[in-house]
Image 1 (cartoon, helix red, strand yellow):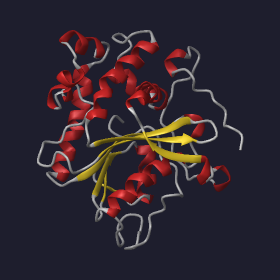
Image 2 (tube, helix red, strand yellow; image 1 turned 135 degrees about the vertical axis):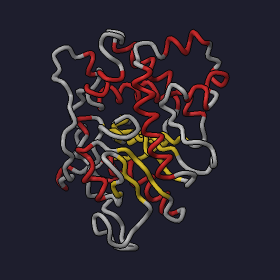
Image 3 (cartoon, helix red, strand yellow; image 1 turned 60 degrees about the vertical axis):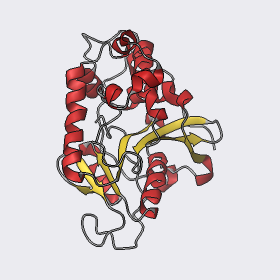
Length: 282
């Protein structure tokens, strides 16, 4: 099969005439567009993938999000600088055993076409919920000594970010998650994304399946995410149930409930494509 068109070699910020990106409704994958199983594989990311992950975050998430978190008046005009700073901030998460970054790779070319970040249970049980995306994660997880960061390093990597807005948004989501789950072990999606030209091909379904099969295999461990409104109906198909405007939870195969999934019946993991503008930073 021919490699789909590659038009995301630069971030949206490097395309001066590009139209603003907005969240679009997620539609079921048409079978004629679905990639064959042998064409896509799921692999663990390495820290060397982080620059590409950071670039994909700028490509995939809508301008409204980035304009709020990195206001144009504050951020660098150089897209490469923004990518480098974001990659630096997220790189320490690779040293956390509870953070699992996975990628969907198009086998014919080896291109990374989708990414998911999952925080998994089993390592910091009893510890407060704390998203690795937050500025405060530097102290909470002890990133500075692990990465040999100086205060000047930390200041530089966060330059251009409205930290009050960033930590207020993500920290607020953590507060909601803590209120819902308390000390219950759970999987947390932060984030999920598929490059625009690969959406509607079944890529994100494979990234979701990787986690759902493991969570269900551990006795139906809870799974939690924050979804964009455009993706909400899709997650119902995966067995998630809404808790509020954006928050959704899944506790394995269910009987009845939202979506009418019967006990023991596999949720339609291969039937839908998941929206990219969601997750920890939607």
